Amino acid sequence: MGGVFRILPEVLKLFDRVNERKHELALLQSEMEFAKIRGEIMMKQVEASMTIAELDAMSEAIKEQGQTARTAGKFVAALSALVRPLVTYWFVCFYSFVKVLTISLALEQNANWKEVIVSAWTADDAAILMMILTFWFIGRVWEKYNHK
Image 1: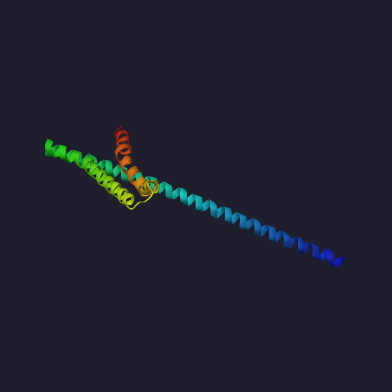
Image 2: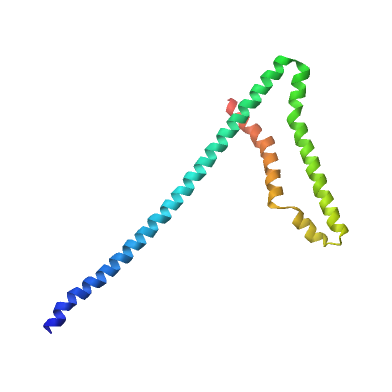
């Protein structure tokens, strides 16, 4: 009996150490997950600040372009004001032409029209559309509120 009572505290200490190590491991995993989430948040903040800085730089460049065009005369100012819209229209027309041509070629190859339509609009197409819409609409709102 004496031997059992002497070994019993050592067995209890062993179980306690095992539980303590499990607890430390769980804490370490929680800290790692927290550090990962904190890193993702910091990356998103950096991306957001870069986007704001890029919009500010674009706004400043547009201001300078407008001032330069005004000093050069009305014709140059009008021509300068048409550059961005014309480039946008040209890109949208050319891009639409390529998409229509791609769809028509696929249909000539006797492809299923439903699959052709679904596969013609990709995530890249949506991203390009969003960039154009953001440039023309969100950029204008951004410029409007930055001037106030």
